Amino acid sequence: MKTEIKTVLEAVKNGKMSVDNALLAIKKEPFEDIGYAKIDLHRGIRQGMPEVIYGAGKTAEQISGIAEKMKQRGQNTILITRLSPEAAAQVGAMHEMDYHAEASVGIIGPMPLADGIGKIVVATGGTSDIPVAEEAALTAEVHGNEVVRLYDVGVAGLHRLFAHLDEIMSASVIIAIAGMEGALASVIGGLADCPVIAVPTSVGYGAAFGGLSALLSMLNSCASGVSVVNIDNGFGAGYLASMINHMETK
Image (cartoon, rainbow, N blue to C red; front, side, top):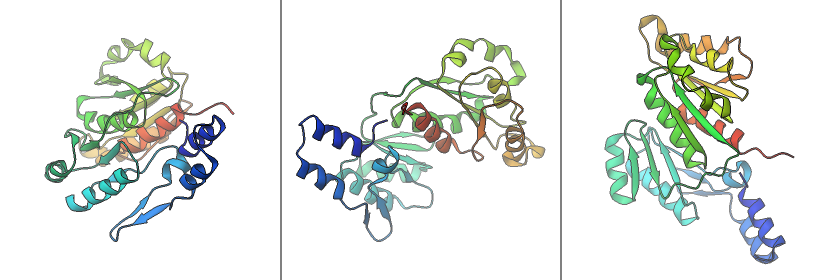
């Protein structure tokens, strides 16, 4: 993904922006302090992907206020994660927003066109893992990626996964999401030639320890090329997958 600063410099190179206007764009304040939050306005310049609002623990008024400032500073699409239905109803009254209740995700503004180098596959062990998977998938889509969803393809019925070998083999990045014993990541890691991001979920009976068993299984995977994010961290997986899918050859 081209960063904002690279876009500005290319505009200068192509004669579409003056040097003075480019300097003004780059010199804008890196953050805005609104009392209860310091909004990172230069994250898109530094990382290629703009600020995201973490909704848990914030009031609807705070979320709305942050979103309004982000819109004023030119952020077209705003992702809000861990947004409760109650807060979503209030924020939605103040901003035009699509709320995805299953993923607890709110999206203000249009979805961008996919501009990644390939496709991101999001696969789950079971249907119960879908809320985390949707958080990952929507995060990736908001950041300009084409996402293929493969849900309920876990090791309890391995033939279900093998029915999607074409999608697995052609992916640029795969996010493998599973609870219980978390074996899905190792199976996919042994099949794919691309990076695999494993997401343990808190799905499972008592000995699953709220996702700890899946986390440890994924960390101990014998398949090469498997990395692991925190329990139920669909956002982190989707964000990392987008970074990988937008890498440019130096």
